[in-house]
Structures are given as structure tokens and as C-alpha cells.
Image 1 (cartoon, rainbow, N blue to C red):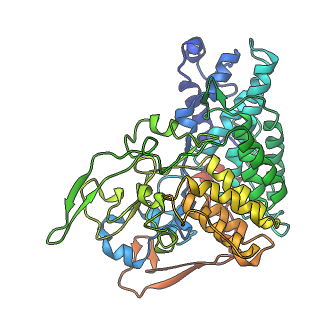
Image 2: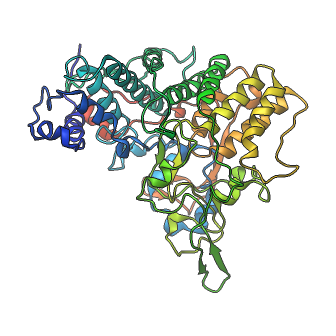
Image 3: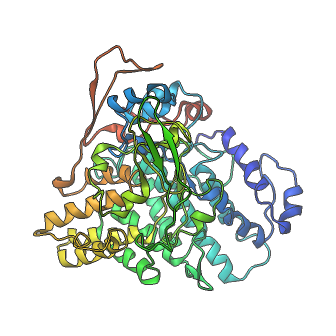
Length: 515
């Protein structure tokens, strides 16, 4: 079997053990790392400390959202503020360019070994490899840590597979999946397993994670940054929905909601609040006043995010571009008068990407947790959406509408527009999928597009089209006519290319996707 030393994984080994930083681990931190064994993990407290790194583990930095129809970058929006669209990877990704990774310096944050999902895999493996060797801890504590590590690894692999691999279907199961890493060895094989083997690995991790026996709420407060029965069931519901297994997805969504079903009521002023308004002016034009709601308080503080009581598993998409520009197609889905989500999350005529007081020529922004952070982990809202969709797809339209309207009661102003109705199963499915898009833009749409185009229902298929200039290595060529870009149903571009830096460090063992 071919082996290779992955320099990035060597770096992460040192990083992992430097961030633990708890008093009980001081001796552990003082030890020197070696290539073969890194630093010794000797106690149950040290393993627990790895799983407690919520300030690191909470961040999901998936770039795939730019390729969805939620992202409003097109020739018109680009022309409005050309000078501000200087972040070329946003442009390359928005139009599914498969070669940009050869020309950009930084790796994708989701894949990058030192900071992305492979870091989380390393954390999980460090726990699983050392759990039987450390001192202290009861059998119950070790069982909980084992299940938690399996959830962390399953979650990381699921994100990577649904970003850098083709959708899992019978036709694709022999395609390239991911390297299967079960240890912290720097010489573990980097060959990509098949997609089928990758999903078997994810599901085996999920089954181990489902053995956890820990409630989400402890002492009346949710501990959603750690694994619990509700968080594992929530992830299982998402996983099986993604596999178009509506029976299993419904089962786990019901289990999650059976334990924890709290929703944030957007109509309750005590649960939602605004920051201070400010006004800016367009030179020679009108003035605009912006007032950012609830979650846009302090971007460097986790308190607001911790306080979002809908989390089952605390994960936030934190891409860092500050530029969730909603497409007109997405904006058209909102009832601008009655939908509180439009009120709280859509900021008209303003986008954080352009600075705190810079007019944007009418371009809107989407905000949740301040500038660039949106809930991406399983939430109670997502469970209601999964329940509704699964019931509708299996013929229980009445039950589906009850589920979706439970969510809408917490999102829509009281009145006649709260409850959705449907005269048929097809209409119910359509309305529920529209509600799903309104509720979770940018974070779930990429995954949804993949599964819609590979299920048994042709009515939900989506071909994404965008209008933009020809793209060169230097950026858009505005001297040429605007052209139409299409992401077809079975496009191989549904697997993002692995960054060239990772391929170089892989020295021919880690292979690029075939396009």
C-alpha cells in the first residue's frame, strides 16, 4: 500500500495539542511533539478537553454556497459595485470554474488540513485511538466520548463528501470518495476510497454515534456544543434525508423533536432585539437608515450564537467573505410584509461586504450572526422541515402541513398568512421546499440541489443558470458579452475541485476529481 507523509497533517498534530489549554493538561502541553506519536494523551480529562474546543469546532467554512441559486452574484450586481468584487475565489466558485484552484494561493478552508474538517477528523481519531489507553473516567464517560468522537468524524466526512465528491447514487458509487483516516498517523494512506466505501464509513460512524446516552439539556440549559441524543438524532435525520430515505429521516427527526423542540419566536420582542440604527448617504443620492436585528451584535463573541436556543448541534457557517448577497430568486420567495425572517435577516440596500458606511447601489445583504455567520448545524427548525417534507413525500399531506405551520407560527406575523394550505401532495411538497429555502438559505441549498436532482421525484429537479461575463485568471472580462452559465442536473461540477496545494502535498496519491 502506498504511504505518504502529509505535511499538513504534521502541522495539525502540533496545533491540536497546543489549543487544549486547560490547567489539568499543563504537563501534557509541556511535552515535545515527535513525528510518530505527537504528544502523549494520558488522561480522560485530556480527551474531554479535545471535544470541548467549541471555539474551534463550531466553524463550518464551506465555499459551495456560492455555486447555488441563493447567491445573487450576476452581471448586473457585479456592474453595480465592480471595484468591490475583488475576492476572485467568490467569482470562480459562483460559476463553477474547475481550474481556479490552480491559481489561488490559499486552500479551501473546508478541506485545509490545519483548520478545516480534516482537523475535526484528527480530533476525533485522537480520542478514538487513545480512549482505551488513558487513565481515569468511568465506563459511561468513555462510552459517551467514543460516541461523540464518532459523531464529530461522521459530520466532518459528510460535509467533505457532499462538497468534493459526486452525489451518492448507484451510478456514482464507484466514483472517487475520500481518503479514509482512522488514526493520527502522519503516514496513513491518502488514496481516495470509492464513494460507496466513504458512505459506508460515514454510516458506521453514525451508528456508533447513535449509542450516545446524554440529554441535550443539563440543568435546564442546552449544551449544544457537545454531542447529545438530540444532536445525533438531528444529524441522522439530515443524513437520511440527503440519502432520500424519508422513513429513516422522519424517524430521527421525530426522535430529536421528542427530546427538544424549542423554537425562537420571531414575533416575541423579548427573544429578538435590534442594535442601534445608523444612516449613510449616497453621493448625490438618497440616504438610507439601517438597523441590524438580534444576532448582529458582536461578531467576536460566541454569546449570541450560544443563545440561539434552536441549536441541536452547535455549528455555524463562518466563511469569512462577509458577502451573503441574496439572489432575486431567493428574495422573491419571501413575503416582505409578513415574514419576520425577511425583516430580521434581509438588509435592504446594504451589504457588510462593502464596509460599515458604504452605500451599495441597492444591493441587499443577508445577515444572521453578525456579518458572516449562519447556523449550519442541525436545529429544531430543520427538524420541523424534515418532518414536513418526509410526511409530504410519503403521502401524509395533513401531517406535513401541521409540521410546517408549527414552524411558520414562530416566523410569520400573526394573521391569515401563517398557515400554508395545499390541494395536492405535489403542491404540499413544493411549498415545503420553498419554506426550507427561506429558512436555511446559503447553508443547506447546495446539499439540497444535489439530492433533488438524484431522487425519484422529477418535479423538484433544479438546473441552476446564471448570467455573467467570461471569466479569466485575472477575473471577469467585461469587454466581452455576458454569457449564460448552467449547472446541469448530472454535472460533474457538483464535486468541487480539491485545491492544487493539497494535491501537491499529496504527491500524486491524492487525486483530483475528473471533469
